Image (tube, one colour):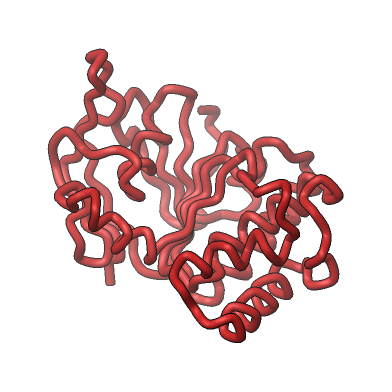
Length: 231
């Protein structure tokens, strides 16, 4: 069953730049999909439309049956609850501990403290940071900070995890450790869409790959088919 249906989507910014041009794409529940391409090819614009940071100029994006582009601003929370987003620069709150950073994502929904505690401990265990829940972000390595960001993104049990260059600031060894965490999350049933420039990771993980060029899908590769042809 498709979790995401993107049909003839176009994004034209106010300055006249067409970032995404007539893209159609379906992503099934539980898939792990890489989106690759040169800088400026439309990768970020495409995923920003998925979590409604941007609206499509034309076309349709359905996420779990909800037409994302037609959602009123006050209703955007309906899809934000169904997805998590992980960025390259972590976006952690420096004055909060690891535990507090992750718990904060649940507190805004008004969940009881005991329920929050159970969920936070569970995801910190999943990302391998249960022993560091009282540490502050400045005391953590880059890889550990990204694990906290991932824990925060999945603590509410989202159906979809969107990762925008999550290994962009990390060394190759740490990057693969992060990918192992993401694979474990995917195996639990979460659909993952990951934008990346790291072709070594794409080659190694052998997932479905979407190659964008100048705002269009230049090529699609089924799981295990991708061979590095150079972006």
